[in-house]
Amino acid sequence: MKRRDFAKKATLSTFATLIGAEIVFGSSLIDGYNPLALQDPDPFKMFNKHKDMVVLNDKPWNIEAQAHLLDDKITPNSCMFIRNNGLVPEGNDAKNWTLTIDGESVVNKKTYTLAELKSKFEQHTYQITLECGGNGRSEFNPPAKGNQWTIGAVHSATWTGVRLRDVLKDAGIKSNAVYIGYHATDIHLSRDPKHEPISRGCPMWKALEDESILAFKMNGENIPLIHGYPLRLVVGGWPASVSGKWINRISIRNKVHDGTKMTGDAYKVPCEPVAPGEKVKDEDMCIIESMPVKSLITYPKSGATIKEGKSLNIRGHAWAGDLEVAKMEYSIDFGSTWKTCSVEKPSNRFAWQHFKATVNFPKKGYYEIWAKAIDSKGIGQPMLIPGWNPKGYLNNACHRIAVKVS
Amino acid sequence: MSKEEIFRKQIKKVYHLLLLLFSLFLITGGMLVYYTINPDFFTFKTKTETIVSTPVVEVDEDRIENGIHVRTGLIDAEGLMTVVNNCTNCHSSKLVIQNRMNAERWNATIKWMQETQNLWELGKNQEIIVNYLVANYPPKDKGRREILTDIEWYELKE
Image (cartoon, rainbow over all chains, first blue to last red; front, top):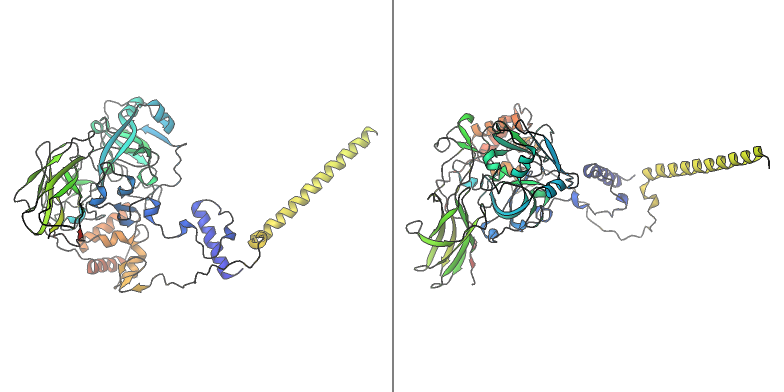
């Protein structure tokens, strides 16, 4: 056997082990041809993402959008950010997929097939904005640990599924129930099956809301694998990590769920504000609940040059965690004066709201358009980076774009 | 024909059938063994195939270009290979490059990875790794808000 042949066969057999199947006609492969999965993975093809999406991390996969990619009222898959704590599970089979409801506070532990979930419970569709708790982390000073998200870890797709409430109530919730915790089939980075990459949850009152759903469709189609096929939790207004992907078990807990990334400093901020860079003990950290008010200018793309005397139409989206956006403003003079944008009502609770405005510039020059959303409690976005926290969560500082008038 | 004869004939038939099956089995087995040794045996095609020539480039997987370790994108400096060998197995080097921390926080991060992510004991390598990270990826003071940079200017047509 020639050395090269041996090498090819060795690779092919390794590959066969990897994909768990023999490559039919493996030996007939033309020299120089590599099976697709052996090539460098192209995430844009693999996940059907827009070419302008930005890869922050390829193991695990973490990919974010840019503001101008999020211009659609309902975010298409191509522009939805990807956030993973572990490796994408392999061989998800919708036919044999089951969801088990268990935990200390379940009345009857129950297991449902996907078909049973779909037929037994009423289906609902909601547009739900999901934002990563660490969106905007890259701006914290001193820098915070983790993927350095800029502004693109947010999306607002439509999700179809059954209410978590209906399923939990079918199994029965004991009166001492406090929290739910999800479990999923993703794989720990170390490939150690004893470790879960992430297992988070939310208090019962949040789990029982109308819009907290177990989704099997996204934008009217089966959820893409990378976004949680065949079943994911969708819980609006809270860090997107509560909306677990690839869900196969939900525990009704009699205490705050203590799964991976519920403890330590993950998805937590100091209970009391701290100075930038200050050390915070684990016990002084509190779990993030509702996300803060925020907005993005999605049109035009930053860097537009326009002719003097021309007005500029801007637009974008705003969202406010558990609340609604009540008011939307913009400034072209670094906050000295603010003008009002028109802002639409959300299509349902937790859907982002669309705003627009026509901007006029007094003279030629360099401008920045800053956008500020204000929620129904009168709380607005800061222009500076908000309270520093060790893990760099909840940066909801105003988004801005650069414009030149010539 | 006596009953005995009929019976003998039937036995013979069965015997022949078994013999045939056994020899077929032997032949198939032999062919399979041969196939595992020489898989090209059953590829009934003439050897005048068009050669798709992909030049076999002997690539050094740890080659450095312009001061960057090409495979990982890490800066070539003292401790590089220790970082490559210990810090890019479970996660991508992209996660390392994105992060800016001082020695204390890198050490805390390593401890966290050892406690929760199955990172092994680094021994003497820990100092080499932390020194490399602090020297090559130091935190940068960003103030309370940075100015916009890398703006790609374009003419907006409406």
